[in-house]
Image 1 (tube, one colour):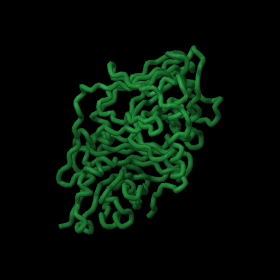
Image 2: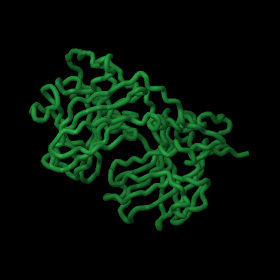
Image 3: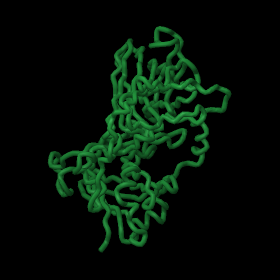
Image 4: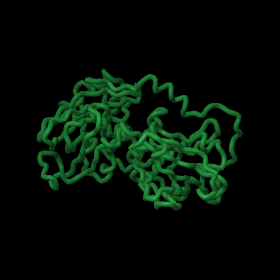
Length: 402
């Protein structure tokens, strides 16, 4: 077994999330009640637009531009040069926080946001792409959690009006739209470290449109008979997400009809198909799939009486449709400790395994995993000795011994 912990040193980096204290005056109110449009950034001033904006590790560079050829309105825009790293293939990501203690505003309630609007100029001679979406959490200065976004094509040598209309029903499954900590832009990895190899893009006039007449989104999640996820309900198509520090290793996931792939022996008609990918460095990273905190909090796990923990477990089935054994780590997340407790799960080639996580065992090793769970994940070590592998996960359920 291995225990995943947030490295203590990273905690020190949290101070960088809040900009250095200065004497900048509070900016003018950015909300226009007549149009319900909230300005996120127009880059006419350094603070708060550039000052609050954040770029993640290996991003590249964001700088001020005053060449009017690349300004949509006003006198300035942001010049973006995304990289993403080479040996560790990351997707360059930047974001705009929605909450600032320094400037005295909280715009994190996106429950009635209709559109995120911006202009982008692609200075390259080829089409580029950007994904726009919402953050679900700012973990620390080095890590954020993202919700599902939308990818836009940026035509070469010209302006593109990017308008992102979020699917509130889908996003509300895994995230809390009443508390969105940021709006992110994610670019393609350039497989390079030096800025001279980075493409050049420009960004201007980032706004959010709020429609107070939009109906409030109720919960689409439902749980019964101890079932956490069996992938038979439509909302569960969007319940699990994949993540990897190396973009090359991020798994492809999809809820599929198992009969279409000749898979038998799993419960029901549908399962989560997970395709893992070969990396460049053996065990350099741990890609994974995640069951979000929102689902773990709502599914009934935390409602199990403490006296019943020793006879209650979370079980799931997994079928390995590949020619090699795979070692997974089932990692129970806790809001109490902020860490995860990992348990080894080995699935032989062309075999099905029923895996069981004891409530009493996991709560003992990582307090809060049951009583106050965070996201749980299933991870695996980056591998270099084989090609893609295919797995089917199904029937995550709470099982109590009689």
